[in-house]
Length: 161
Image (tube, rainbow, N blue to C red; front, top):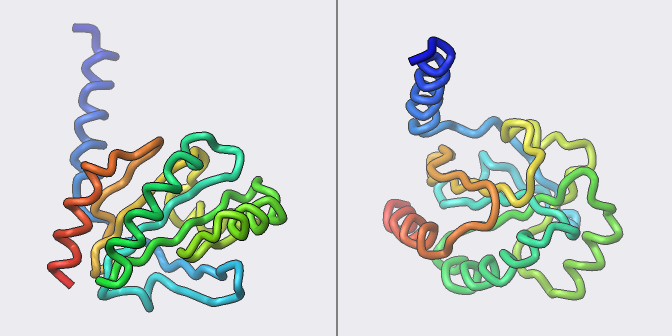
C-alpha cells in the first residue's frame, strides 16, 4: 500500500475513535423568535435536540414533519427541540415561515453564527445533534435523518433522566 493511503486510513480511524466518545457541548445561549432566552446549561437534565436548518434547504423542510412528530410524542416527557436558523437565512423568512407552519418548538436566529461556531462551525444543513441529560453529544447527523435511528435513542435518554 502507498504511504498516503495508510496515513489516510490511520487518520480516519483516529477521527472515528475521537468522535465516538461523548463530547460536551460548549456553552450556548439561544434567543427564540418570541424573545425567550434558553441556555444549554439550564436544559441539563433533559435530552435536547439542536438542529441547524435554513428555509431554503429542501431536506430541512422534509425534516419538519419529523420534528413535529417527535415534539408531539416526547415534549411532555421532557425532550426539548431547538431549531437554529443559519446565519445566511434572512430573519424575515424564518419568522414568516415559523408563523405560517405554527412550529411549536423554539426557533432561534443565529445571525452572527455564534451557535454554529460553538457546535463545530456548522456550514451544512440540516445538521442535527442529540444531547443527553448531562449535556453530552450522543448522536450527530448531517443531512436528512432517519426517524427509526433517532427515536430509540430519544426513548432511552428519556428513561435516563
